[in-house]
Image 1 (cartoon, rainbow, N blue to C red):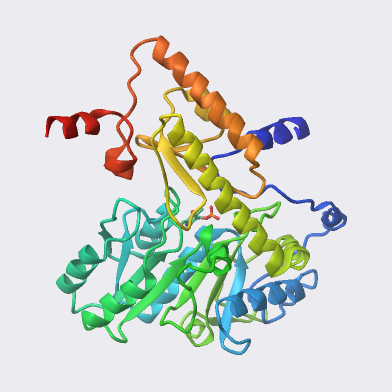
Image 2 (spheres, rainbow, N blue to C red):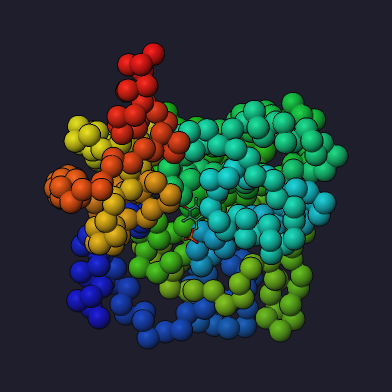
Length: 394
Ligand SMILES: *Cc1c(COP(=O)(O)O)cnc(C)c1O
């Protein structure tokens, strides 16, 4: 099993998991059943917990997004999905007759939340970059002006790493007369932890009228077990919580039993890396992602990279064995590589060389046509040849 797992790590490229870590010091805790049952800020009667670490990690994230210690509430979730389920639930509890608005490139957990909570969900079109199309948002808002808006804002979409324009979304809501009848949840599963370390990136902050932010702990930060963080305003949590005598705690989390190992790993990573360490990793990823996109284009492969992202999108390889070997995530005619800190330039070069070689082979076998990805990443990024011909005819 150990051999199988470490082999699988070697060629990982498609999923956004940072595997660049060494958590051997955590091994000593494997024999404990650490459970942060219930609320992180209220001790339950179960004594084997790691709330001190959890609260320290939450404080760090609250500060990152500009909330004071006495202004926020949050917890370490089991994953980014649980953070989305929580954020959108707060929105629904504040506005029981609200409508959820989310771009169609939002993560499937957002649409799952809408189904679970039986809230009407309106899908917004996206631009070719993958960002929410604010013109479409505006027209759909005006059609439902009588009902509050619960908006999911993507801080990095899953497939293209697109950042929705938070400021423009807020302006649109205000212009359409929604003033204090909206709730914004920011889904920052991957890029939520990258944006604060990129100077020119738009700022996610509670100084703006947002209600909650969630990130995955095992994505950019790197953690040996899936986990995540969700932060909301303390005043909001009142709409969720009920006191539970059995736990002698308050019930405001989605899950009851909660992984107590995860906060210790997150705490350890944050302390080891610090702001400087994370910033360096972010810069390295952006640099390497540019390198990959350039190499692909030089080789005649259609590729696209959003400015503030390390997710490189390109034409879907025609061979399932290749996709499987590199563990690529595919959707329709495109695939992507998410350049994480553990993905080195050498690995990217190996990947490009193998792709070019294989592509040649697919060509020789006949029946291979360079796929057209103009619909997904725009004509100017599509190198299938069709668009050039069209231009020549004109
Ligand atoms: C990965 C991802 C999620 C879900 O995170 P999990 O930790 O896998 O549950 C949510 N939103 C976006 C944009 C993601 O990329």
